[in-house]
Amino acid sequence: MARRYDARGNIYMVVAPEYLRSNGIDIPDQASDAAQTRKVWALAAIEACCGWAPGTQPPGSKAHRSDGLLVGPFQSSHPFDLLIVNTDGTLAERSGNGLTIFSQALSDLGLWPRDEACLLRVHHDKADMPSPGETSVKLAQVEGMHGFWLDLGKPAFGPGAVSAEGVEGVAFNGRELSHVEPLALLDAGWTRSQFVRVGNPHCVTLVDNSGALPSNEQMRQAGLSEGLTRIAYAMPTGEGRPCPAGINLQWAMLESEGRVVARVFERGEGPTASSGTSASAVACAAWRVGWVSAGEVKVVMPGGTAPILLEEEQGELSRVRLFGTARLMG
Image (tube, rainbow, N blue to C red):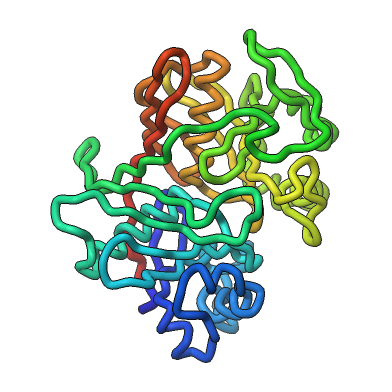
């Protein structure tokens, strides 16, 4: 099985482990073993499944025809194990759009449990987070669209949540945020950032106007691209500063009540049209500085708008949920 899906402009290939093995890629039978040996097989899998055929790459397109691989399922019934492989061969702890796509693929294959939530377990090789990370997913319908609610759990805030090193505090709306010097050196408007962990580690930079939101085209240009890569990517591709394991970068601007505009630069991938966990992190950061209240928040990205539900208990966010849909591409 190898299928290509789109969720808000975020494109992943869903591939079964046996499909990779049938193409000469030596991936272990167990997801946990596959995660620990990803350096042996991951880049070969990316090249085989995400690379452009000779002469087919459109002018100005990204180096790969998808944003990564979803390898799985490793079982025929839930809970289901999978791996999320970035195009640089690294593994992600979680991807909101990726898990939405994987859920749709399971449904298309007739594997979705009848009238039940489905537990998805993402295996990775990051030392600062337990593996696998679990996400409960339910079938749902929002505004006439059939899709899935992903329960992303309770977010964590601050440098300690993402293992950030050497950052200074800065006050904003009565909250202490972080001043990330490498970001501020790239743009004078990028001085206030909120670290958030929603499975993946995120750095959300809060900006005052749309002019401070970088476009995906700008983030691909030499100079800015190199600077963001140094920050977002772990060594040896980047510098892993301030987060040695790398960090997903977002920029957020409050557009109107309950509506936040965002841009995304992912570790292991670069600028993306959208990201589910990034949208969730943006909503959490916006709540923490008083831009939005608990309840529904819409995060607008170039690839589409992500509905987020924030639940609050005793002045703290207790749970974040993300709604998503995905479609099979031709």
